[in-house]
Image (tube, rainbow, N blue to C red; front, side, top):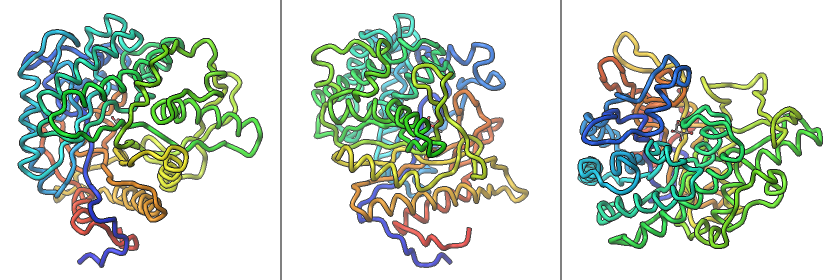
Length: 454
Ligand code: FCB
């Protein structure tokens, strides 16, 4: 018996999960899908742990009906998924591939039939390889190709799909893809990094305009940003300034143009010649009015002064004595700090938590259950903080867990499990974890008792 919820979310608060195409779909060469930069990247030796790829992933391309049923069983209200650009336009531009559109069309209908709101993301890092061959995000034309793709998808789905996200985490696409090289396309070029970042932002603006122009109803459009409160490693002036610089590149370099139509001045100065060329009309497009801002939160970032780190002379440390997941520090107050800051500094129309979740080593017990109590505690503790922000007037209207299923976690491959549902990648069998059942109850009660023993 669950105790009465003592934390209740506002009426109409939306609960759901998030996922992305390359991480779950598989079917990488089926029904006319073109290759993406991740297909190419995964085949380069040493880029992904154990040489794993998203060729099969969680086989969602074939098992989507079962996955929609899981969502319905859990009572989910929103499903954030991403559309694979190379399924729609195998060469990135020009020729449309009808079976690609059909796949998402059927998925949308199945979701709506179960009363689940579809929330597609247009770009979750799987650029068509054919466009990479023309310069990728470093090429300004890619922003126009993205608008063309947005229009095609919008024409097909916007009669039924009202809520949209343009990009997932443009910071990661730019920096991990073009600066550290940890993600596709695996480049290491500071000039290209910030040019790619600018074109990603520009393409966001163009896509919003393209979607609105083709829409068959009034749309709610936003973007999902990976934001993190940046804390200095010590009280020292050098660490504090380093943290400020890091915050500028991680958070403000994306929030400021989108919500204030300008790049942050201190960062423009800091980056100097690597800052991209901004054409006169760019900021007007980038700052196109949005209906919501999506916040992806996993952890805080702790920064120290590091004279050897190029450009920003700041690097991340992992403080001792804290609790960690397999990837990051577990720091629940960070989501409260972030949500209140975004609201205070930027006043967006509305805020959605578009990703929050944790990877811990899950295993299947003797009786076939997956007792992921650490994940439940993580979600509970973060939801307490989200609720605290709402209670103080921050307009957070929904919360999505990353992720529905265990999936392909980029350069880590299948080692990192984030799902509310366990996936046996040998058999593709799904097992709803204890966290999935816990989250289902939270949704049913629109709240929970934070003192409940877990
Ligand atoms: C986010 C990504 C998502 C997933 C989670 C763990 O940065 O948007 O695809 O990898 O991290």
